[in-house]
Image (cartoon, rainbow, N blue to C red):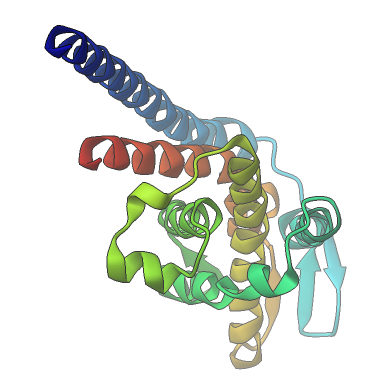
Length: 224
């Protein structure tokens, strides 16, 4: 019996080691993908950028591609989450203000527009959404008891994390733009078109959520 037990323990250890190596490899690939996205933004989106300015008032304009399109997509995502993914609105909006707070941290008004570090913002938001979707409980409970072993890594939860982050990120950046609008002489929301922080935060979401998920899985495998 002792020999059988040792064989089972060795098999479990080898499977866990194999899983950790696979996660590390996937993390490296995802990090490389993040870098490729930045290259894609600089070499493709910047050179093939398009804008469509829509007047709201005499002093406030909004760009269709830079702000209006990602806003419409975000609202459609909320519809999908509520009616097809059966996510309660209360659960969705519970941590939305936290995402807005992060956007206020990473974005600041410049002389001509609202600028910031959208990559750091989306990565931070992705980690929040990964925790709130993979953990069946409140975020403060997870932070207090550090019971990461109760995180439920399923495809369904991953899809929810993608959708929530994909709507949190652009809406949060848009709200920051609107908060600063009364203090500006004129405001062109989404002025950079396809390279604006609102739409880029949405386009960047699949990679950042994947990275955050893999990173959390890696920590859990090392810890538990």
